[in-house]
Image 1 (cartoon, one colour):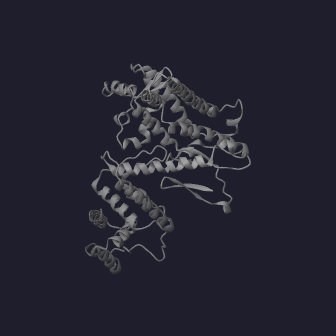
Image 2 (cartoon, helix red, strand yellow; image 1 turned 135 degrees about the horizontal axis):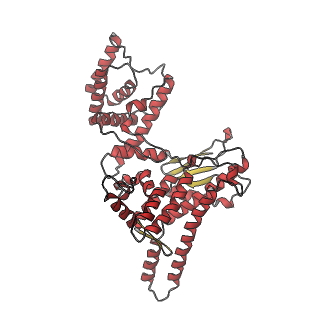
Image 3 (cartoon, rainbow, N blue to C red; image 1 turned 90 degrees about the vertical axis):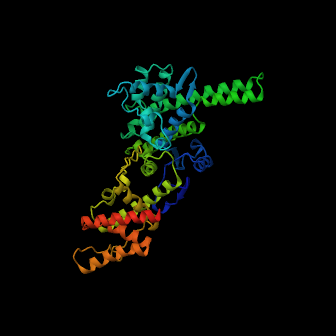
Length: 433
């Protein structure tokens, strides 16, 4: 069985005829996914002879949610330890006092005060929840909550570093007394949060047992105590991920001792590259709109269409590199993106996105659906070029964008013709969008 997300749900595709066994699925924390896991039940209750799929939370997404909990709650309290976003804020201000020689280079303004777009960027969450930030809090920050915040960050850093490690787990990793202690470190992180949860539950129980409080005061006190802990959904997903990743690793290495289990492969996420494209389309806007997400979706379709078409041409030409779709270079692990701000390039990107919406990503039969011939100087080539130019006036938008998308793949266009194509795409963009 293979699993893929569909409209924030989980879509199962039967691959039993191919004897493909799925041991683990990764999912986001959508409502449908969460209820689906509850229906599957606890992995510990599954029969040992049944290779039931194991589920884990998407690690980059979970990292951002933990960072968001620090921002939204401002102060988290673990026993006598206080974890405060104000400590991060003070560290940033102290770092910025030294112009040209900042104390913490990676802690930028966007990491300290992320807007709607910046909150989708994994590197900005990672800039806060990393070992370097914890070290700076311990040694340079004067905020009273700095030490507790640093301890919390080190726990999250351990979790994320192991789950995105490029070094594989081997048979030695599950051997008692082995040199690889990463699974034991993950259990230490889980115990840190579980002990914290026990303390929160104890405080809630004490408040409920206090008969001197009115029902309203009791509810307010319980709400305050619970706000000192990360969201229960994040805690459940963290516990789920650590427990199930450990179980999956032990299961695979027990059944297949020769195998190497790469934790990074569990955390590499194409969804983050999707967000990277969304941020690039958003440019300087601080709001995420449905239209921008739609453009990203259809741009993915175009990328699939172009690569399918070029694979049939059996060439090393990479249309994505040449067209530089919106200037985006996305890292599937961290979701980083760099957006080109050149007007001409933006035109190509947006018009190509529109083309992908009109032309579905299907394989192109090269024999029957060739690109317009551009043999410069030949009568047939000039006629086809002029015909394409005339189509703008006829407003045959769909066919024109389709032909131009294919024409951009040709490597024999002159500089003037490339300029003409860009101008035509610019006009189509203004008409269609």
